[in-house]
Image 1: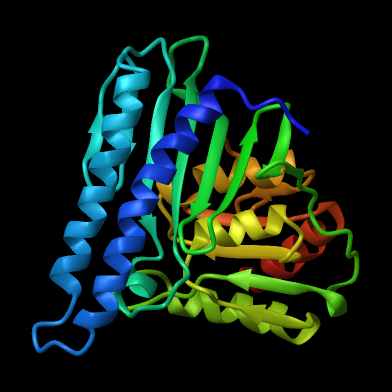
Image 2 (image 1 turned 60 degrees about the horizontal axis):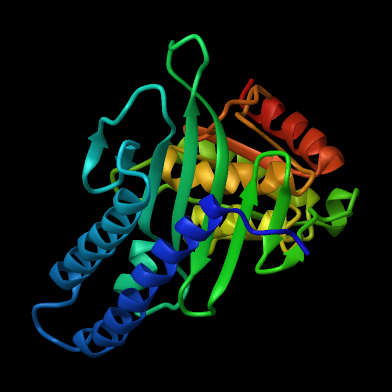
Length: 272
């Protein structure tokens, strides 16, 4: 069992506190589904309230750190210290429709030593409020679900693999590109799933539930914690060209070594 650091404890406390409110608000959304106005405005307020809760908790614990927030944007802190990268509600459409599959994602990213920008993610947590599952990782200390060590799937063959993805939707993403990639991967794997939360998809790759994952047009807060989880669970995360970045967001391709290599070849072929 891993000794949980003070940094992870701070992140988990913030995620769980925001998660309590999201669970309560999720119950209200189910009732609002039948209202004439609909739940969209309510969900927006729930998202903002969760972000505020996380901001308050993290700010109190690390007052000099900056933030990258989905709703609140960039809040500058001491440039020599890490910053928080936060998605208070990943899977908003699921939440909106009363589907109990969404997560809170919090990551800590350190600055580059030369001051030229931002470097590695050093800690991350993906918390699923409905199931009360906490997936966390620290750089060089492994990935964990609660107190259980996580490892990526050991499957090596595509025809045994279950792959997750995120699909383009109205106003977001490249349908033509996604279709080409799907056309290359789909016939070769055991199944493809689209559950609607990239943070959870990556956490589930780290946990070995999914064998691989691809998606484009994400934001850093969607994938910052998930990228670290996969890497610390023994997997690989790159963009579609096979380049590993501290936070893969615009293009994400994840899996164990064999699965990532095979998926990368398929994706590269589809995009030629």
